[in-house]
Amino acid sequence: MPGCERRGTVLDLAPAAVVFDLPAEPLRRAAMPPGAPLRLGRLEWYRDGRRGRPSVCVVIHCPRCGQPHRHPWRWDWGLSPDVVSFQEARCWRGTRVSYWIALDPRAMRENAAAHAEAHAAYLDWKAAEDGLSAEAKRLRNAAVKARRKAVRDERRAAETPAPVVAAAVAPPPAAPVPPPIGFHRPPAGQGAVNRG
Ligand SMILES: [Zn+2]
Image (cartoon, rainbow, N blue to C red):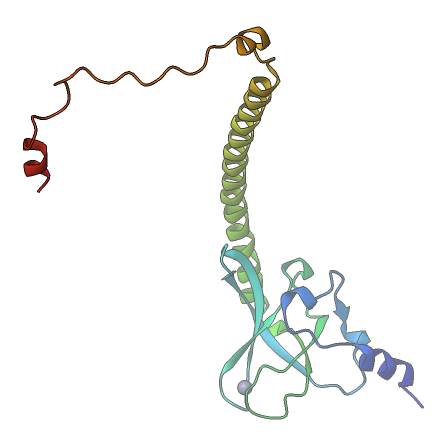
C-alpha cells in the first residue's frame, strides 16, 4: 500500500499542545502524510507566563469560527515555510481533529519582523533576568555566610570546656535579697487603689 510507512509514522505522532511538546529538530513538509491539509499562519511574539519570557506562536485564522487561533512554535525553528508541526486543534467548534501548521510564505516579511522583535525582546529579558539572578545569588550567599558564622559560633560555644573546678565548688545559689523596706513598695493601701 503506497504511503503506508509514512502513515505509520504519522499515526505514532502525538499532536503538540504546548511549547514543551515541540521537538528541537522540526519536522519538514516531506514528513507529512500525502494529502494532509496544512494550515498556514503568521508568526507573532508574546510574553509568556509569570516571568514574561518572550516567546513566539503561529496565529492561524480559523474559517470555522472566524477567530484567530494561537499555536505554540519555536523561535529557533527559523522562518522556513518548509517547517511543519502537527498540533492539537484549537477551535471550540468543529471536529477537534489535529492538523498540520506552517508559516505562511505570503507573510514572510511580517514573520521575519516578528522573529527579529522576539529576539531583541528576548535579549533584553535575558539581561534583566541575569541581573536578578546575580542579585538573588548575592543575597543567598550573604545569608549562607551569616548562617555559617552563627553555626560556627554556636559550635564553638558548645565545645568550650565547662569550668569544672568552679562548678564543683560553686556555692548554692544565693537566696534572693529582699528589697529594702519602703523601697519600690508603695505605702500600704495606695497600690491597691491605683490598680483599681
Ligand atoms: Zn476556530
